[in-house]
Length: 206
Image (tube, rainbow, N blue to C red; front, side, top):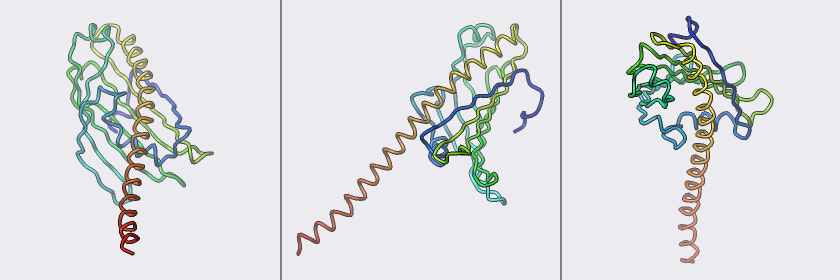
């Protein structure tokens, strides 16, 4: 991640819990999070690359097309009403001690005000150390606003927006998990029906 560990203006971190879902379920939802009704700002997802490296780690690279939902006061200060951006997402599944963790790194590739606003994010999903049926998400962000007045104020506004969006992101994950569970149930029901039909025909023939 090119910007991690370098100088920054504002750093924020958020800790979220998924008390009813194991790591495997949550990470599947994380990889299929978009589109969802809670995060309409993401308007497109394209897979650029996916594979396994020599260490057996799964990597993927995706391009997210987004429209930032910035507060109107931020738009007025930076003098820009168009807030479209392309975000590159790097994902890695790595074995850590006795369990796997999923890390997502996100940073803007092209943005109409890229020289003024920069937000890099890191999301880490890992199993709860004391309960395998729970998952912990740590969301970190580096925020930098340059070249405009009230930059410190704007960085605080951006941090607040990220905090609010984190709650929406958790709701989105729950929505995706419900959708995936419903799809699994539907496939299982279809499979049961497919099996029963030949059996019923065989009974009828007898």
